[in-house]
Image 1 (cartoon, helix red, strand yellow):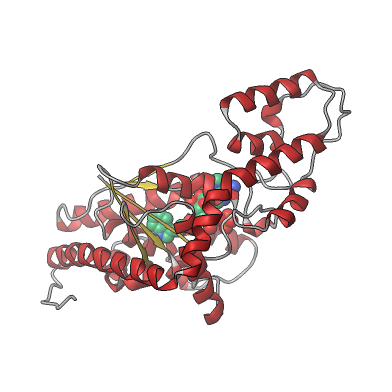
Image 2 (cartoon, rainbow, N blue to C red; image 1 turned 180 degrees about the vertical axis):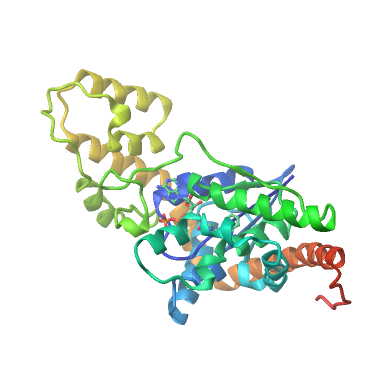
Length: 327
Ligand code: ADP
Ligand code: TRP
């Protein structure tokens, strides 16, 4: 089964990115699955307009992903723009994509609703994402819930193409991690870099602790018993705690009479412990940049070879095929 996912290098990864997306990548790597994961720098170009920043963030994303456990022995890791076949495929897909389908997509709709002008890059963002998915004959796309709509669009576009030109593309399915579908941020809303409420995976422990201490808590008196499942602080703690620790903490909530400071401290300790091995792995790769370059080059080679096959199949099906050299 081919697993594929991409993540934008638009800022340091936060707990939402990890528990909503990256953890699934790690779980799904290794045989029998054939996993392809990439850093979506072409998608990032729709919002990042600073060359140095984009390059630095792409590099950071690679280090973060390797630190968090993506293993080049078990998965293919590459940078999106290293596979130009995907951009070529995007054009073929654009020719069968209706404007209406893209007008319904949330990123574009939201920007428009806020009265902002959108570039074609943002409007056609889901088509590039469809090409990412379809170029590798992907079956399953592990993503956070907010990306499900885009995977549906990829299915729609693949169906349209197949309807017109024959069975060229495999129809992909999204895969979400239910339990942590929405990781709350420090203000209780969904954790997102757009809301400035994130806790980053690789933040310095001291600074992170300060942020955790500032997490918004509810104002009910401490003596009052509370339902843990409605408290963002508990929901965050749950991500890192063992079954036993969770039960203990839940009991504390139900009994009442605790201070939030105590829970925040437990959360800071648990998260620090949880990410310590990742921090170490990341430091290793940061100290060995040549190794990282090699991993990405090897990944791109493997990805290109697959994408070239699928592109050729699509070109042939719609009558624009030509002989090409791929290296
Ligand atoms: P952000 O909202 O911070 O801009 P992205 O849109 O770049 O994050 O998301 C990257 C991946 O992480 C996506 O698959 C997305 O669904 C997932 N993700 C982001 N925030 C969360 C969250 N709070 N809970 C669960 N998954 C999330
Ligand atoms: N749009 C995704 C996000 O913002 C990133 C992405 C690009 C992606 N291409 C993809 C995810 C293909 C899965 C499959 O998170």
